Length: 73
Image (cartoon, rainbow, N blue to C red; front, side):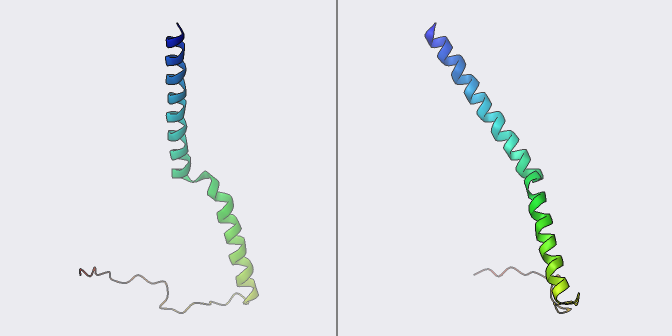
């Protein structure tokens, strides 16, 4: 009887661990926790652009996509 109780509890704990891992994966996948961090970063960007008078800080060539070529050594 004690063995079956131990086996039942072991399977229950193992199942809860698997379900918790799956839920953690989906939470990280959809990044629910990063929404607050993104808005804080946006507020910092707005504050820094206000200090510069709203002028563009970067040049025209910065941030553009360029062709990528892999170099094999």
